[in-house]
Image (cartoon, rainbow, N blue to C red; front, side, top):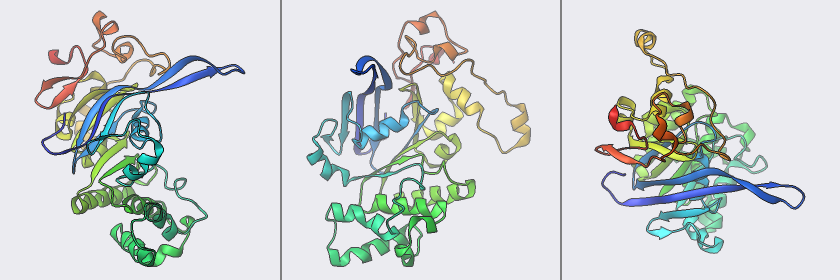
Amino acid sequence: MNPDGQVLLEVRNLKMYFPILRGILERRVGEIRAVDDVSFSLSTGETLGLVGETGCGKTTIGRCILRLYTPTSGRIVFDGRDISNLPEREMRTIRRKIGVVFQDPYSSLNPRQTAGSIVADPIRVHNVTKKSELRDRVGRLFALVGLDPSMMDRVPHEFSGGQRQRLAIARALATEPSLIVLDEPVSALDVSIQAQIINLLEDLQRTLNLTYLFIAHDLSVVQHISDRVAVMYLGRIIEITASEELFQNPLHPYTQALLSAVPIPDPLLERKRQRIVLKGEVPSPANPPPGCHFHPRCMKAVAECKRQKPELEEVTAGHYVACLRAKEG
């Protein structure tokens, strides 16, 4: 499910269930299936967009890859090594090669540290460079993301939102990672600033041969930056293909509904197109529907959808869909 090239990250049958505990004795009475049997690959230099509604499990996947969560089951193979159950001591060397940029630049930076210290922290932790060369290295990272090195002694509240996110990107690049997990990196920013950050990420990817897992709910942003897009619903990937193919030829009913809500700049086309309005609410991941999770809200559902769990199948070249009726058009 990935274009030709060296596979940097491979996720296979990943599950992340959180227990539901009740009572004084915290008895386990159920589980929240945040991620429910997810598989995908990511090649070196590629950007995979991971999209879906809030609560679909996309951020949980990112945190499992970072090993902030230990998966319930499944495999996460990074650079040829299975890291899904590595002890914390061994994960230290792996984390040097995986960077992360969080959603909110206002809360992901320590307000008591200077900007230079924030970027320098991972360099110190991983002993990337000599102490005498540390400030010069941080200055180069500032310049790389479009910040003036003279700003190193400022604290985060002296920066704008866009500048803070550039600071977070500099921190993610500090240990020279090969993979960066971008968890909604522009959703908290103004639209004009979003474009600047996206352009910066694309420039950095070309310059440094970076690989991105781009987690977002904004389909227009994902379309711009991603090589491939995976659409999630209630803990499962339901469609994955090349970005251009997904936006021109969505096959899953849920993807079609999502795309119908994306504004079109042309007012004439916007008036003519038909909006797909989904019925009902997203079911609880603590009690997902049997069979296809989407069937209670699907306009194309048949009786078989309630009983059979659809697997990701290649419907056209490189276009995988988890839908029993996808081949019918």
